[in-house]
Amino acid sequence: MPLPNVQSLLKTKDSKEVVDALTKTSYGTDIAPLPTQGIDAELLEGVVLRKLQERFYFVSRVAQGKMRELLSRYCARLEVDNIKKIVRTKHGGHSFEKPILIPIPREQSLVNFEALLEAKDIDEVVSLLRDTPYSLSETLQSYKESGISLILERNLDGVYFGRVWELASKIRGVRELVGEEIDLRNILFAFLLRTRIFSQKELEEMYAIPHPYHSIMQSTLHSLVQTRLEDIPNVVTPRYSDLASEAVKLVKGDSPTPLEWLFLKRLYRDAGVTARMDPLQAGFVIAYLLMCECEAKNLVSIVTGKQLGLAEEEIASGVFTV
Amino acid sequence: MVSRGALLRLREQVDLTERGKELLKLKRDHLAAETNRLLSKVNSRKVFEQRLMETYNVIKDAYVSLGYSGLQSEAFTTTGLKVKTLTRSVIGVTVPEIALEQEARVNSVVDASAYTAANKLSPLIKELLSIAEAEARIERIAQELMLTSRRVNALEKAVLPEMHRAMRYIEAKLDDETLEEFFRAKRVKAAIGGHTH
Image 1 (cartoon, chains in turn purple, cyan):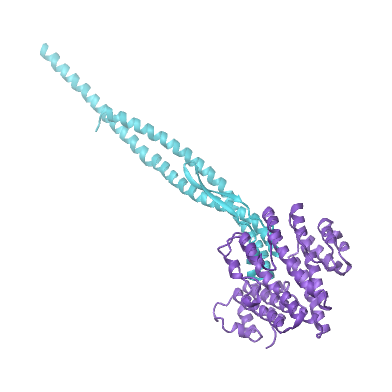
Image 2 (cartoon, helix red, strand yellow):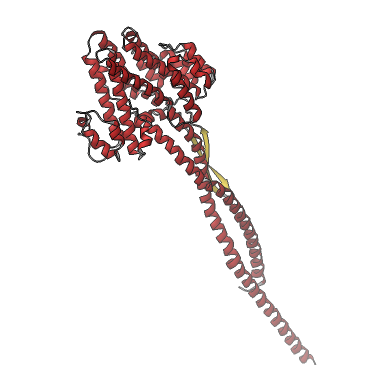
């Protein structure tokens, strides 16, 4: 079945046409069982996330040896996303509402999501995660003192990328893409810290989390937060100067384009280049997974935008074309 | 019953009713002033709605960027807005008072588009509560104003004139009786005077 064409989906009139277009693609088998009436963006988003999860775990299942271990750790990004969603729900005290999670088969997960969803509060979530790789015990006290769930999420990112980097750093082709993602997330995080009001102690708590760095050193991250906005492109490594300049323009200009979009566009662009360059390299697999993620994000943006009645140009500004 | 006692009681009643009318007029004036004060707040709703629509566009952008589940997840990081509703008495009218106990904290929102939306929405919620309070108050005060105006009008145009008419009737009747009594006494005197001569 063909993959969905983003440009033609953007040109559809409404969400019904999007559904009709998607039924003729590889998403057709997942959309077919849905009721014809009342298909909305939320349902379609569920279909897209399920497909993403299937692709991720299929790739990790068919790989062998060290690559299988690496992909298994890499695919855990969906698991980490789910844990973050649960942490946010418990942090906000919304224990009666359930977040919408990416469905991950129990045998492929290191975490008992059902138990996490039933947890009363963050303390219980942390205690349930204690025996998993995603232990948050070290940062629980800092979180309680500051009341900022970002601290826990940063810890989760640190654990996830730490585990992936441990294996990825040894494989050519994979090292570059994973390293780039770590760098981009670090720079993005520094920009994010600049746009919020945090106390010095809170900032230090977020930097204190152990985090593997590719080419962005921790001292650079400190400088990114403390230096003048206009000087940031000179502080980062030359590889990311142009990106940092664009990010500075976005922050100063109060543009509706989100910062994350800029950084993800760079990541997906480079993944696209890697995928086209050498399909026989290990990096191709990581590039493929990133492309799957890109496709999922695009489809979610399009179906949501169409449901909200937004114009094609408005939706297109949030879509990645690689 | 036509008697001096009845006239005295009626005079007292008129006096009391006049004082009551003046008090009600005072209440009406204060209610009218409060209504005018609240009207300016309620009238700011149009401008507020415009700003809300602009913020909804920012929220739509966040929806497109994150999808439904993503934005819901970001929204969960905001610690709850706490609002308390109390009742107050304004010129004898029970009105609601909305007190913002705790503002929503949006610092934990990670995504930039979600954070922008949350930042724009947060002050609007405060304003929304203020407008809601004004609208609820003006509704009750306007109702009380209408009732009070009706009472004042009823007193001025129906009750008091009727009372004054009754007073005049009794006074006239008493005057007639006094005059009759005087002429009767005069006739009796004349009759008594005639016998003695």
